[in-house]
Length: 388
Image: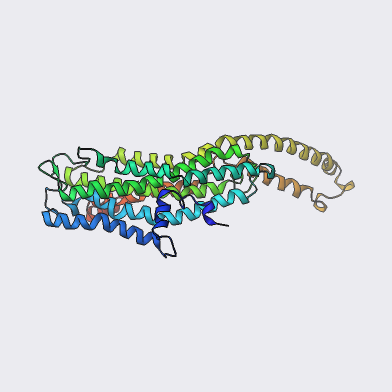
C-alpha cells in the first residue's frame, strides 16, 4: 500500500513542486541536503553583503550580523531544524494514521465512515489552495512599502542605513524571513490537519474500552503521535532565546526582567501543542462513565456470588471445601485488577511522559540564557552556595 496514503506531509503544492523538479526520486538524506541548501541561500548572501558593508563583525554598540543572536538562531538553528525534523515526524504520524485503521477502534459496520474521514483529510492535504495561502502569507510583506524589520530601541542595526534597508537588510527581509515563515506555516498547516482529524474522529463512531491496559481506552498512541509536534516548541524556544540574548547584550536587561515572558512561553507552548487532544475528551469521558456503571453492577453481582458461596466456609470451616482448592478468589482479584485499570483511565490520550516531553522541548532552548546572563564563575559560585 502506498505509504503516502497515511502521510500528512507527502502531498500539497510544495510536495508536488519538489516531485516535478525531480527532488524526490531516490534521494538519500533529502531533508539534510534541502536544509543545507535553504540555509546557504539565506545566509551566504548576508555574509557577503555585510562583509562588503563592514557590518559583519562585532562593533559595539552597533549590532552587526554576527552579533545579532536573534537572526543567527532563526537562520542557523530554527530553520534547518524544521526542515530536518519533518520526515521523521511524518513517519511517526503516519504510523498513527495506520493504527487508526488497524487497531479495531471502529466497528466494522462503521469502517466506511473512518475511511471517508481519512480520505477527506488526504484531500485537504493534497489541495493546492492551503499551501498557496501559506506562500502568499509568507511573501506578503514584499508587497508592503514600509520596512518590516524589528529593531532594538537606540541600537544601530546592520539591516538599516539612514533609515533605509541596506542590501543585506533587503535580502534578509525579502528572502530569508519569507523562507523561514513559509517553512513554519507549512508545519502549522500540518498541525491544523492533525487537529481536524482529531476533531472529526469521534464522529466516525469510535469503539473504546475503558479497561484497556494503555490507560487511555486504546488511544495512547495518539498521545505519542502528538509528541511529534514538539519540534514547534523547540523552534519557538530557539527564537525566544535569541531574542532574549539580544536584549541582554544590547539593552542590559536581565533574566529576572524577562521571567514572565519565559514562563509564559513554556506554559503557553505546551498547552497549545496538547490542546488538540482535548477534542477527544468528551468521547473518552463518556466511555469511562458508562464502563464504570457496567463494571460497578458486574462487581456487585460477582462479590455477592462470592459471599454467598464462601460465607458457609467461614462459619463452618470443617464442613466445607477449602477456598484454596478453587479459583474464585483469583477470579475476583483479576476482576479487581481490571477495575483498577478502568478507574485509572485518563480522559485525555496524554500521559505525564507525553506532557514532559513536549514541555522539555520548550524549556531546553532557554538554558543557554543562564550561561549568557552570568559568567561560569558566578554560576559555579551560586551552585556551590546552594550545595555546600
